[in-house]
Figure 1: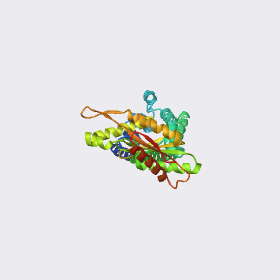
Figure 2: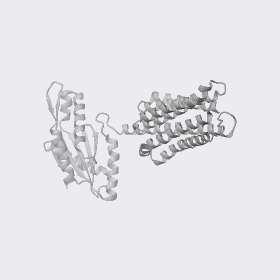
Figure 3: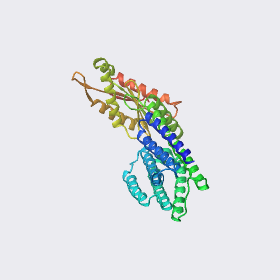
Figure 4: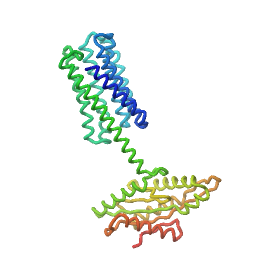
Amino acid sequence: MSFLASLQLALYALMWALASATHRDERPALLHWLGFSLTAAGQAALVAWRPDGPVWLTHTGSSLATILSLALAGRGVLVFLRQPPRDGFWLGMLAVALPALVWIGPGDTPTRVAAMSGFNAGLLMVAFWLARPAFVQEFGLRIALCATLPAAALLGMNVFFVVQGLRRVPVDIVGANAISTSTWVLTLVSAAAFNFLFFFLVTIRLLQSLRRQAGLDALTGLPNRRAMQERLQLEWERARRYQTPFVAIATDIDHFKRINDRYGHGMGDQALRAVAKTLQDHVRETDHLSRFGGEEFLVLMPQASAATDGLRLAERLRSAVAAMRLSGPDGSVIGLSASFGVSEYLAEDADSDQLLRRADQALYRAKHQGRNRVELQAS
């Protein structure tokens, strides 16, 4: 069965190699798991080579390969979770394991098995402890428990081998016996669980990233109209359920067409990015800001009143935009300003569109009353 395990692990290595070629953001972790699968496949192949192969290679070499494979897997998990890789720990374990196993040699099988399994158990426990908080935070407790199962199974197997080695009980994982069969079945199942689970998690993260990107405006990096409409609906439903106020502030850059016509669309894009950053720097942490279309932006303020919080924030944003200065391609200084319309959720609103309509009407009044001003919804 060791040869079968070697083939299976080699296929996992191929899977990670292909995945690393297409998943640039996750490539560092995937390369770790590629190394883990290749090293584990080599270890299983060395065991399958017994008793014909060189004894130092098939016994001591396979033991070192096992420890190295788990170190690569564990460090890869930390890299995947964006955690410090703790290089000192992994290198320290390998630095101790290498001379220890060489000193023990291939002849003293019980001691070698106990030492190898002890290192393996230590690697598994530390990797689990370091990865646990970030894993639960990103993927939830249920998936974290699923990830624990293969690690717990391997830990149990290694603890068993430590006990057997300390008792000087010979352990045969090559012949046709219950321990050999159980060892390789557990290895096959654990390897499958680990590789498919983390391939699934890589896919989840990729889909989440694509979903986030679909909700972002490519120019400014702010949420786009679609994402903001979803947020608006959530806030409107919350306000309706709990009768809590919230505010919408519609804003539009004044004379934006003149900037495009005079300086070109590149300058217009620069102005949009600059205004977006200025607005983002001045809204509250709990507020939601989006580019709602063209030169228009929308701010949602949960737990806020239009007459106080909304007007105060809109005036702060107006002043910040009015203080902006951009350098034109011809060296000229370009001043900017924006108009703002403020509205508030009303209990009689049939839907969230009515809130936006009042904000747009207030913005329209601000435009027609001279621009660079703030207007409140009509009472």
